[in-house]
Amino acid sequence: MTAKVGSTVSHARIYGLGAILKNTVSFIMLPIYTHYLSPADYGTIELLSMLLDVVGLIVGLRVEDAIFRFYYRADTPAEKNLVISNALVAAVASNVIGSLFILLFCRPLTIMMFGDPANTTLTATFGLTLMFQALMSIPMAYIRIQQRPWLYISLALLSLALRLALNIYFIVMLNMKVEGVVYSAVISSVVVGTASLVYLFRYVGFATDRTLMKQMLAFSFPLIVGSIASFYSTFGDRYFLRVYVGLAQVGIYSLAYKFGFLLMGLVWEPFTKIWDVRRYELLRNAGGVETYDDNFIVMLGVLIFGALGMSVYMKDVLMILSNPEYWPAASVAPIILLAYVIQALANFNYFPLLAQGQTRQIAHSHWLGAAVITVGYLTLIPAFGMYGAAWATLGGFLAQFAWVVYRGHKALDMRLSWSKIAMLLALAMVLYGVSCLIGGPILFNIVAEAALLCIYLGVFWLLASPLQRHMMLAFFRA
Image 1 (cartoon, rainbow, N blue to C red):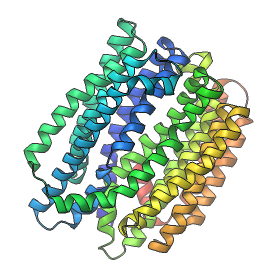
Image 2: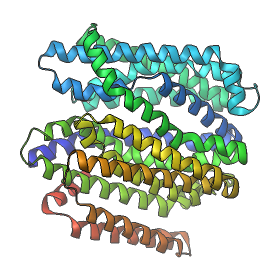
Image 3: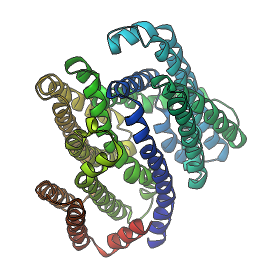
């Protein structure tokens, strides 16, 4: 058991290093974006990205989710390679269709998003990146299966470094603003996507099987439908903000939302890179349920700690890294961080449904969340702007979480320690409330806020079992 924990932590540590470096690049870009781009420019980039993602979801096949399940059900290396090859063919074909759709309908899509056709050329150009996303996503999933985390983060960092260099060249040196961001994305996706494809062909080759393809698509189809609702719940608020209050608030809100993505990127994603593989192994092993609960407590406890730390230091970070016009993001971000903790709770509880093949229930949870969040968009955003958008997001994620937990428990009871997570979440909210009352010199604030974080860690330690404490120490050392 301890050896398994050590291996999981070791791999998560490497993925975590990649996440730290990735988000370091994001922080390097933050002052560049906020000094060389106006909030309206920032909002434009966000809407272009949203359009690309929603088209990718509509035409995409979500075969990445099927890879792990079908790969571990395959008996021979040839059958396993066939799973990967089928996934690549399906993903590339769907993404090409998506790029062609954006190219053919770029003008009406631009008018729909921005209210005028001024950004039509940018929309068409940015759509090219969709074509190359599958060339990177499927090879990266295969590398995770191979459990080669160093190679995984090397490719990811190559993409980031290339995009950073191109952003600095286009935005800072050539002052190209939004156009520079678009060109950087296209060039980096072409280069890294091609390199990833060469690697995959070296190990897997090329072959297809119609029967296997149908099985994988049948498994993935409900996830495709659910992904559309999930995307809407994550990014739809930008569109409603643009309609009701303008692009400037879209830019400020998008900056606040980046901290939700940062939380998931630094804490949750490194863990899931290895957890997506290991959790299927637990079903075959004695004590798998106990190990599942240990990972649940430690990872959600660490995630809540990360959300609390970001919330209490948010204002100081934005004052250092951004212009004053972006500072209101500090009061919106804690609501978004809480919403992402709830979403992580839901994500962890997807597994019983995935293991039993009940992917329709996951789709139902996303659409329930989308329905709740739409009510929030229509009622809260006109009255409260970006604060209404944040509360609507939290409400939608809570609805999704409730459905997943209810259905997942019926499909496969993993006997999770909910009371501990509830206590840690309540404690974090109380400590954040206390931090809002702290006022004084910045050095005093930093020390006082650090003390609040220590209180959380102390309670976390007392609630944890010996094995969970071992995992906590390993993760924090990592």
